[in-house]
Image (cartoon, rainbow, N blue to C red; front, top):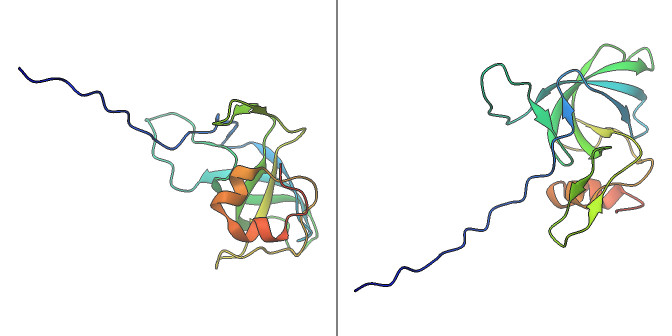
Length: 139
């Protein structure tokens, strides 16, 4: 008679989805943009007619709504660094920020600005080490 062995599959924890297509986020760097609108979530595979969602640390495509005239209306890649919706960490703590914020990236994957305003979530710095190098405060 064989014994059944229970195996525990450990998967990457998913942060609670907070932003969907069309969401407006603030720009947390000094690249010249102030307000961004989420257009697309990179790498999202979902159900038909379901809006793609993004959370902290996800790569997104944004369009600049407010900012310097050269950047207004342009499309860039960005990474979400803060979200209003609370999410749970693996140690049991709940994290919530005051606003939704993103950082604009160049096509090569480096930061477009040289400074990051405000705190940055630890989940974003784990997935994007270059953001962690520039960030002054990691929560």
